[in-house]
Each structure stands twice: as structure tokens, then as C-alpha cells.
Length: 498
Image 1 (cartoon, rainbow, N blue to C red):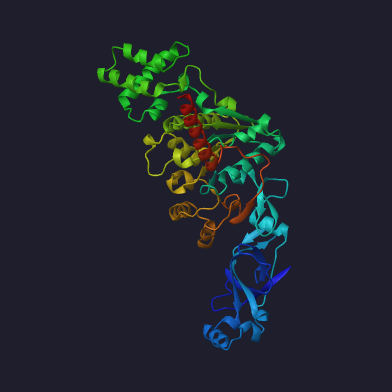
Image 2: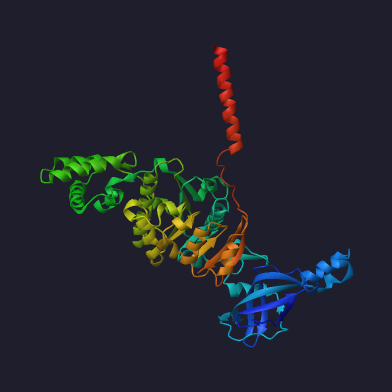
């Protein structure tokens, strides 16, 4: 379909930018178009649109005519002179599944057309229908957007959006796609650090319930005999080398006995050892007692058993209020998974981290943010071992730059905070000024995808979920109404009793 023709302006056409005119309302901002140049077929994206009309160019003329009591539209054929001008960024020359850089401008008068679906799929790097992860539709084209699992996850993914923009919904769609895969397609194991209990509903689906396991964070226990002195040091930031050496010695002695042991056994071993320096003997047990609680046990939970190809584990931390305890569990699980994957003891996996800005904080030392170190390590090194991470955050500015910059694909939904936008721009090479401005206007369910998963940034409409969203409690109005009603009933009961 012909959409319009390229026009000559003072600045265009150039090899990378053109303007075209159309009298049809068939073109949208961010739509893809094609035209011919001396090099071949060019694919471009409409970066902006504006209307022109020669009868409304001069404010003075309009004012003078209306002073006579007439409307401009009554006296002149204004509708016939109304046109839409599109500003297009030339993305590349498409020739036989190869993309080349445009270096020659097209001629004014060249027709602008809508590219065929097959051409657009190949140019943008989308998978053929049925071959990838279906997360939505390419805006303005109605083309199902399927992505390569390797391209999307191997070099890590970040899902970024402000509250209410649909990031949890989008991540649930990604999880559904992972659960849908068959053995011959290559299946990942996946685990989500679920801070608010938003992913438990996947386990309630008839279709997926046998492939989704929910683990209550309150019931999760870290087996003490799986921890080294350096592991304890991550939980106790104040520990110094002398304390670490003595702790390591105590642990070795307990392991030599070949029996399960807990933190209380380590404390007894240190307290009874007369060769340990008095100050270390006094301080170290006190530190261990502070973290003991009910999070540690002699046997504990096996992280490795939670990871199976094509299955999802939801670690529900919504009942845990203490941020330190959440951090310790997340750190332990991430460390165990990464080390197990390096030894090929677990299948290739993707670790989804919700509220990632709380687990890998920017501007905070690793000692004060327990999971930050291992999250950054997986982000830097995980791709070599098939250990992928997906960071989900509503505050990108507070998320570790090291971790975020290693997420080579980003799925960005509506964000309006200028500080968050600046942080994203600094950590992503694929965002230009036009795309950055578009992020602030995205509606719920719309997303900008850029990075390794696609050849060029694309705007998507996220597909509908196949599972129901989690019920996360009553609305605020209902809670307020019930509170007052219950208070009134209590008062009435008290008065009746008197």
C-alpha cells in the first residue's frame, strides 16, 4: 500500500532522515515504512507527524477574514489543502536478509509504502510465528512479535516500569511462554523472587499447576552445613579476617564429625576452644546469635531440587517483613543456583528478581546490601554458564548500574520520573531522544523493547495473559468502609453490654 511521497525540505532528504507527505490518516507515529534509494530498499520508522494547511499558515489572514463575520472554512476549500507530513528515521537498507547502513539519500517524489510482514520480521529480528516466545503484537502493524529465547534471556533482561504500568503482568506473560515450551524446543528452569505474592496465581491455573511450585518464604530454611565462613561473612558484614579464620576452623571441625549441625553447634565449638583469641571468642558468637533465628537449620531446603526444565518456582516472600531476611534468602538462593549451574548440577535457568532495586541498590556498598554482589556477578558472568537473570524494577535509578548495564535487552513500560529516565538512558545504548520521549506517553500494556533481542527498538502491545492475575486484597475504599463498620459494631456491642 502506498502511503505517500518523499518531499524536499531545507534539511531533507538525507541518507538517514526523510520527510514524506500523505493525505490519508493511515500513518501512525512509530509505524515502520519502506522506500527505495540508490542503494536499495530502505526501512524506516515514523518518528513524528504533523498537519499542514496553507490556509492556516498566517494568523493575520485568519483574523482579518473572521472580522468580516465569516469563517475561513466557509470562504476557502481548506479541507483540500490539509496534509500530513511524516518525519522518518531511515534505519537500514534491507537486501536478502542482510541489513546495511544507508549512505545515499532517496529522490524527492519517491513513494513511501508499508513493508510486507516477512520483510519487517526479518529486518527487526523477530522469529517466525510459532518459533519463539510470543509476548505481544508490533504496534500499528498487527504482527505477532515472537522473540528468540536465547536472544531475550542469555545476555539478561530488565523489565522496567513505574507502578501500575503493567510490569508484573508482562513478566507473567514471559513466564507463561517459558512454561509453554516443549523439550525439543529447549526449556529453561525458572525461579522468581516474589516480594508481593503476585505470581502465585500461575500455580492455580489448570494448565500450568503441575509445572509451578510455590515455596513460602517463611518456611524456607538455609542449611547451615552448606555454608562456608565466607558465606557467613556476607550475612555479617562487620566480620573481619581473624573472625573469619576462626569461624572457618570451627566449621571444618564440625564437618569432620560428619553429622548435621546448626549455628548453635558452631557457637559451642567456638566458645569451648581455648586457643581462640578472647576478643574473637566474645564477639563472634554474639554475631552468630543475632542472625540465627528460624531462618537457619541443620538440614534446610534444597535449592537445586527446585530447578527442573520447563518448571517455575515461585519463592513467595510476601509474609516476610524483615528486608534483611529477604536479602539473605535471595543471596543464598542466587549463590547456590549460580554455583550449581557452573558445575552443571542444575539446568540452564532464568532468575527473576522482583523489586530488584531493593536487592541490588545503586550507591550502596555490597556489605550493606547482601544480595547485590551475587546479582552483579550473575549479570556479568552468567551468560557463559547458562545462568540468566531478569531484573524487574519500578525505580531504575535505585538499581545497580553494574547489574542494569549488563542486561543487554530491556523491556520498558511507562516511566515518567526524569531521574529514572536519565538512569535508563545512561545504561542503555539503544535509546535515542525520540524513543526516550515516547516512554513517558506509553499506556498500560504498551512497551518499548530494545537490545539484543531485536535489531531495532520496537513498540509492542503486550498480549493478554492466559492465567488470572493474583487477588491481592480488597480495594482501599472497601477496607476503609469495613474498618468503620467494625468499629461501629464494637461500640454498639459495648454499649449494649453496659
